[in-house]
Image (cartoon, rainbow, N blue to C red; front, side, top):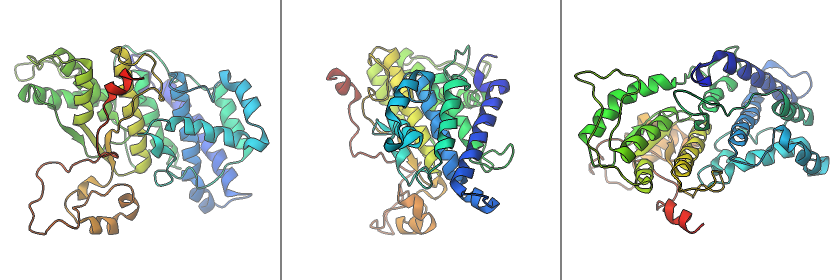
Length: 376
C-alpha cells in the first residue's frame, strides 16, 4: 500500500477501537443503567473526548507537542495526574489544551465549537483511553510513497466522521470524506488550468464545504509546487492534448510562496468542530512548509508563527444571500461564531459583491510570519 490512509487493514481497526472508547465514555457520562436516549444525548461529548485524543496522538507522533498519551509520558502522568490534580481526566484535558497553543487553534477548546465540555467522563474511562494509546495504538506517523504525508493529518481528518455517528459503520450523518487521489484528480482539472490562465497572480480559491480540510491541504501542496518552481504537473489525470502541465510561472521565494498560499486558500464549513480541525491541519501544513524550506528550525505547534487561516464557520449556501439578522435567525449558533450574511447597515439598493463571499479572518490584519521567525 502506497499510503496508509487508503489501507483499510490499518484504518478499520483504529476506528473500531476508538468507537469502543466512545461507547465507554458515553456510558460513564450517562450514569448507571442509562437509556438509549441518555446515551445519545451524551454521545457528542464522548466522541469529542475520544477524538481529541486522536488529534493529540497524531501531534505527538510528529513531535508537534510534548508527549501526553504515549509510553514516553508515563512517568509524567504518574507525577502530574494525581486525584487532587484532576486525575486522568485532568491529564487528558491538559493534553487537549496543548493543541491550542497557536492562536488559530484555540477554538478547539471553545464550547461553541464542540461538546467537549458538556459532560465529564469517569476516571476509569480516561485511564483506559490513555493506556490504549500508550500500549496498543498504532503510530499515526508513517512513510508514504504517494499522496499526502502523515503530517497532513489525513487519517485524523477522516476519523472524525466515524466517531460522531452512533450507528454501526456510520459515517458522520451521511458525510463522506474525499480520498486524496480524487481530490488530486479534481485539482488537476481545475487548479492547473487556473495557474496557466492567471500566471503571475495570487490564485484565489475557496472550498465552500471544506470539511476537515482535505482539499485545502492538497491545494497547499499544489500551490507550493506552482509558486516555488513556476510549473505545476498533473498527479492523477494523464497529460494529453487538452490537459497539459502549467508552465512558465516565475519561481518565488519560500516566504512569498507561503504568503500567497495563506492569502489564496479559503474555506467554509458549517460544522464548527470540523472547521476547527481544518484550521489545525492548515496551521501544521504551513509550519511544515516553513520547516522543510529552512524558515522554521523546529516544527512544533508553539513555534509556528501566529497567523489565521481563512477558514470560516458558516452556511455557505446563504452567504451574501440573506441579511446578517436573517442569518442569525436561521443559524443562531453559527452566527455567534461567524456571520456570513449581508451586514444589516448596508442599504438595500447597494450592489452585492460579485464572486464568492469574503472569508473573514479573526484578526483585522494578517501577521507577518517571517518577521516573527526573524525575531524568534
